[in-house]
Length: 230
Image (cartoon, rainbow, N blue to C red; front, side, top):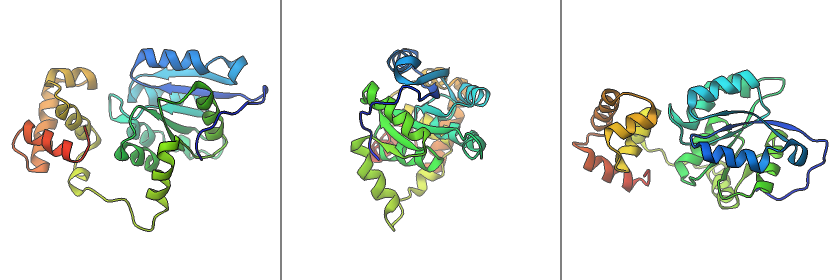
């Protein structure tokens, strides 16, 4: 189901956690949708990385989590993996709606496979985002119009989405490092963004090069660009 602008009954309420590594973006979303009296949405927590997200979600047990795809500590997929028991709870399951700037196939398929109920991009209006939150809370699947057809084709087809065996050899953290290397980040910048040491970054890069049978970061960049991972 695609997002749509809907007038919501005044007595409806939904508790939400915002997970995004950009503080200004979280503040903007909070200002746009977090006025309970006007929208029915109550923002009960925020997080900027995977560990914070799992802690806040576990502590607050919101109905819906607005989840960015790219996060320090393993990404949105890692949050979904660690929160799987909460999603499967018989009473008041926690439901996830991905809210990302990315519309890349790998990102969309990854979080939907991980258990997210929908995926909308950050071009969404505040009113449509509120409506999407309520629909996800009710158990509906919600996607931005550009993504809806793609997602339906990917999951309804009898043919499974193509599997990149080379990419599947990499861990989630190795994929994060690969993307940042391919985007031209220095080791020190990657370490800062992912909250890890430079030595750990070097270890991940060595593992990626070994698994992909590449010789240097220039070959790695070409490899990632060819697969539209950058």
